[in-house]
Length: 178
Image (cartoon, rainbow, N blue to C red; front, side, top):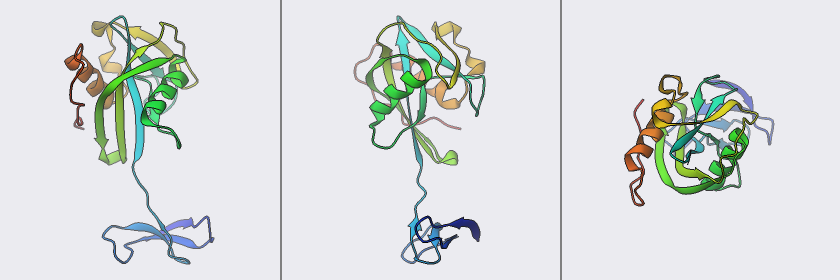
């Protein structure tokens, strides 16, 4: 099966096939045999609170434009998952946070993603919309726009946060179901 792609190193065509000594189909350069392993993406984020209110960002980018989410996004090369979660809060909500604990690990196999979501507190109640957010606000639990949350993982993380609220020691939620 042709991929219409070329190896950046040799310019040779890349096609999907099962390499020798492997069991899965991979992208392989026909010219040099280089195997391009396509691995899952890591998403990092945090359920952030201030005085029992939850920080949510209304997305200004697809997917789920206009829906509410927690600050989260793709982990960048060279950063830890905690550094990534802190960066995402800064980028999307223009706020500083302190990480408390790992809240959940969600495996979204159909999207080839692994989400690591932390429990965090705002350093101060100062926040504003970053470039990827139309709006940012703090919500009381009963005022969270549940029907307008962007992704199932946002529901899972908020529910798990409430379940372990006030606990210092807890097991991160292993994953939700889609």
